[in-house]
Image 1: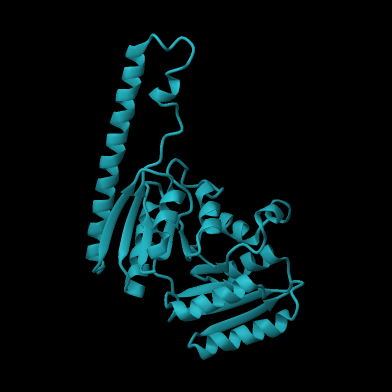
Image 2: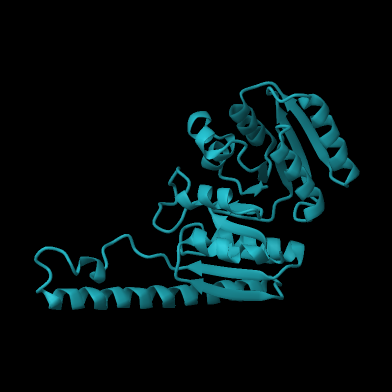
Length: 283
C-alpha cells in the first residue's frame, strides 16, 4: 500500500483534488498516482441502435453515429492526457519526486477498486464532472467508493490548502476506534491539532472510551482539544466545526449496513453533504 491515488476528471473540484493529492504524497513521502477514468457517456451508442425499428436500413446514420462516438472518445482521451500532464507539472514544481499517470476506460469506482491493492490513500472530488460547483448533493461515486474500498479516502472540496488542524468525530464504535488507530499509525495527520469531539449517544461506556482515546492521542504526540457534547449528533458536530474553525474533518466509515442506512440515515453522509471542508474517511 504505497501510492496516493489522485482522481482527476476535469470537474470544478479537480484543482482541489490535485492539491490534496500532492500534499498527501509529500507529507507521507509516497508516490503520486494521477488517475483519469474515461466513463462511457450515458447516451445510446451506434451499436445499441442497430436493432431499433426503422434504423436497420439507415446504415449511413449508424456509420455517422459510430464516427461521432470514435471522435468523442479520441477527444476525451487527449483532454485527459493533457490534464494529467498539467497535473504532473504542478506536482513536480511542488516537490513530488515520484509521479505516475494512468488512464482507464471504465467507471471511476471500478478503476479505483482495480488499483486499490497498491494504494495508501485515495483522493477524490466531492462531485464529478457535469455537476455545478455549487451542487449540494454529493456525487453518486462517493458513497460507492467509501463502501467498496478499505483504503482511507480524502474527499476534496473546491478549495484546498494544507490543513493545520482536524476534527475527529468519535462515537465509541468499532469504526471510530479503527480510525483512531489509523490516525496514530498513519502519519498523514501528525503535527496537526486534533479536535476530539464526541456527542453523547447510546454507546456503552462512551465517556470512558472518550477519555481513553484522548489519552492515547496525547501519548502519541498530538495536541488534543477534547470536547464531550450533549446535542443531536449532526447539529453538534456542525456547530463545533463552525465555532472552532477546524481545517479538516475526520470520521470513521459508515456504522450501519446499507439496508439499515435506508432507514436510519448516516451522519457520515450528512457531514459530507453539508461541509465545504476536506474530509478524511477512515476504515
